[in-house]
Length: 384
Image (tube, rainbow, N blue to C red; front, side, top):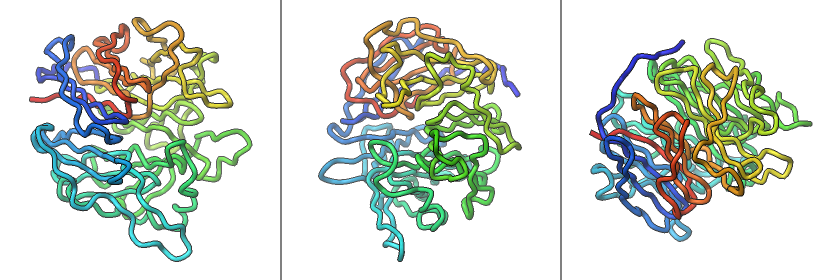
C-alpha cells in the first residue's frame, strides 16, 4: 500500500545529533542548505539518543551517561535552552532469586507514547530492559513483565553478551492506530510484539536467519539491529538485521529477506533502517562490511546508502558526493534518518564524526559538519 499524496512542510528543520561526547542541534534554513549550530549540550557526556516529543513540538529528552555519574535522562521543555535531570531514571528492581543481578549501564532508545497519552514515554536500556514514564520523562519504572521474566531473561543472555558496547533493547514502536499494539527488538533476543498494552509479549522471528551453525528456533540467537514501521502503512515493517534486510507485511508473522537483492559484493548487513514518510515501498539502508571479523567499516572503504523503491525487490546505490575510496567509517543503528519534506531529505552521522545530508532522497550528498565526536544518533524534526 503506497501513499504518494503531497504533504508540504513549511516548518523549519532541525537535526538532533547525539554523540559520544555530547549533543548538537543543527537548525536548517528553508532550503535545507545552511545550518546553524547549537551546541554542544552535555559536553563530555555519552548521549545515546536525543528525541523531540512530537506531541508538543518543544520537549526534548536526552539519554546520557558519564563515567562518574552513571546513566540518566535529561529533559528540556524549551528546545534545549535549559535542562533538568530526571528524578528517577530507568533502573532495574532488586535481584530476583535465581537470576543474574543487573544494573542499567545506559538508556539506549527513547520513544514518545501515543498522541492521546501526552506524558507517556518508553525507554530501552543496556542490558535489555523496557521502561515507561507517565510524567513526561521525569520518573521511570519497569514496564511489562519482561525485565524479570525467566524466559525473557534466558533470551537476553548474560549481561556480557551482545554488541561490543553491551546488549540492548531498542526499536520500541507504538502502532499509531492502537496504543496497545507494541513492538520492540533486542540485540540479542529477537523482535517481540504485544497486543494487550504490554501485559504480555510474544516473539516475532519467523523467517529471520541467524549466524551459521546456530539454531534459529532459539530466540536468543536472533539479533535484529533496527526495526522501523512505515508511517504511511503501519501494517508494514522493515528490519536491518545481523543476518540481512527484512520486510514484514501484517497480518503475516513471517519476515521476508529482501536483502538478497542487494549486490553480493556489498551484502545486506548493516545497522540503520530508514523508511519513507509517505511511500511504504521506499526505504534506505547503509551497508557495512559484514565479513568474518566484522570490522564495522564501509565495504572496501567506499561508503554508500542503498535505496529501494519497490519494497526490496531491487536496490540502487546512492553515493554521489560521498567519498569514493579510503573512507573507513560506518553508521550506527540510530544515526540515519529522513525528514518529511516534499522532496524527502536523508541524513546520517558517521563513526568518524561527520554529518551528511541529501535534499533529494539520497541522489546527491553533501557533508554539513565535520570533526564532531563519534555520532550515535540523528533525528530530523520540524519545528514550528
